[in-house]
Length: 438
Image: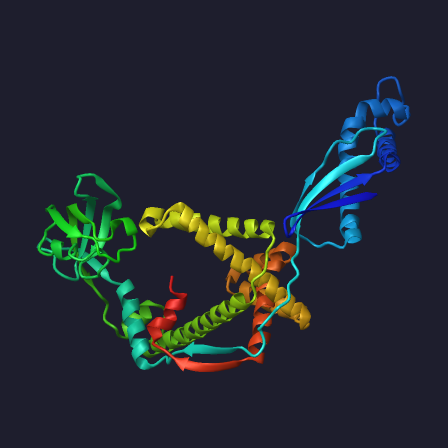
């Protein structure tokens, strides 16, 4: 086997592998013999057709199988011989297999970069937390009650706090419709601040069936840049006015949620809030850790890994935007700008993944089998009657990697943090919990 490797940029490589004609012929003959034993051809007893007759009939199909087998057998050996570690899935050009000639195929791939972790031990970081007090629990109960409100139609004029179901469309000073400035049968709570200043106030006093024309100006800090400071006219149809009645916060309310009494509800909410605070604190600390690592560890990453990560992120973003009905215009950015931002995010993720893997390897971090089993059981137990199906799913190697990857990342992060100095800082609950909002 002859191997020729060419550099294609810093990490790109192209490897041409040549296999002698004698090796090709040997494998072809072996495969044709296997076919000959099992086929029946006109004029010959089963398994007794001459090899050359079988060759004429099956050479093309067998040749394709031989190509795949030769590549599967020789490609790992070629990587080992050249001492290269491919990053991601190599792209193989099968070439052409011809009888009596050497077989040649080409592999295009990226190699794993040399990662030398820097400035990851002894980091000084701030761990943010908050106090789950009675005030926070009471606020949480009120927010919960708001989701259980009862609505009823109102015949009279809308007032602050009412829900107005509206259909509206915005127009620019040129009279043309403003892209994205349109809603259909939208339930708008007056006084909620969901729409631009003046919009909700303009509907106070309106009744079901009324029409309103609102001349407003988009805020200068509006999220869509092209609408910042723009004057607009909104044509609004008020379809319905509703009043919202919140449930009384008592034992009966708690029982409607399947709990014993109000005290039980408060205890359960406090437990949940404490868990949310712990999660939010961990996420913020992890992000600050990653910011520090990313700042001090910049290196070239394989394009193939970057492309794969970007496609995963982009696909998730498109699905989310479609589900929420969000456009690039509503985000105040062009598609190219959003693509550039998410490509940077993908690069950061790939770089941090390679960095953490090397730190973990260097310091002997491992995910043990009992840790994987415990995590699978934790996930499965949350699915009740479907727990066995979840356990069965995680028996698949690829599915197990969904468990091993995050566990490994956490163990490496915990090791890094154990070498550093953490300073605790109490911050506002809303600020911290915003970390996990949405």
